[in-house]
Each structure stands twice: as C-alpha cells, then as structure tokens.
Amino acid sequence: MPLILVLGIASCSVKRQRIGGWLLFFCGQISIGTLGALLMVLSNYHLYLAPGRLGLQRWLALLVVQCAPLFTGIATIVAAAFLLVEQTWDAVMRLRYVLIAHACAAALAILIDFKYFPSALPERLGAAAMTAVWIAYFYMSLRVQSVFLTRDWDRYQS
Image (tube, rainbow, N blue to C red; front, side, top):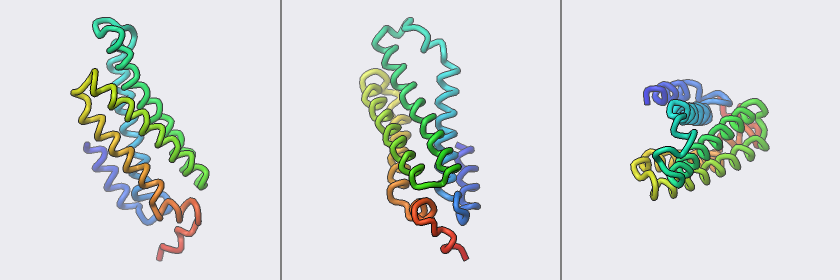
C-alpha cells in the first residue's frame, strides 16, 4: 500500500506533462500489481509443480487463477510500455484489447475462486474492479484522446 501512495503523489506532481497523472499512475499500479503476483507465484512455486495434497482439480484451478491473470498482467505491462514508447493511437487500441483480455482472465479467476478458493474473492474482486476502472479510463479519458489521438495536449498547458 505505501508504494501506491508514493506512486499517487508522484503522479500528481507530473500531471501537467504529456505522460503523467493517471496515465503514470496506471503504469505504476499495473507494474506493482503484476510484480506482486509474480513474487507470490515464485515464493510458492512448490504448489505449482505437482498436484500433491491439492488433488488434480484444485491444482488445475490454482494454476488457472494464478497464471491467467499473471500472463495477461505481463501482457498489459508490455502493451503499456509500447504505448509509452510509440505514443500512437494504435498503441492505445492495443492496450485496450489487452486490458479487456486481462478483465476476462480476472472474471475466469473469480468464477473459479467461487468454487475452489472463496477466501481469495475479496482481493480478486478488487483487482477486477481496478481493471474495469482502467478500461473505462482508456475508453473515456479526454487526456488519452488529446495526447494520443488529436495530439493537442500541449495547447492545454499555459
């Protein structure tokens, strides 16, 4: 949580720049969240090697709920990096599609969690809600449109 607070303060301090504010916060938040998920998988790697005590169904469910959002999270980081480098509307469109795939992976994980891992639901629902917020941001933000589509962000600066 403290990293998100630091990220929020940093995002506010550069919100007048082309790449700043909510866009910078998105990049940091998705990176921190995906890195956290990756560290959790790596720290519990023994659970993913073989079914063991979990049984085959729960083991497969665990693989899906951990790996699907992790892979789409990594894909989101890659798409966001392309957006920051290319700064084109096509890169925004790619990021939107990857975010939708990430939301689908989160929805699948939520459905599986209902049956196999109900204690993980609050965290999973929170992550899915944040993904929905970011999808809405990249579809509705005037800043995203003015920076990447119309390229007139500089005229708003005085």
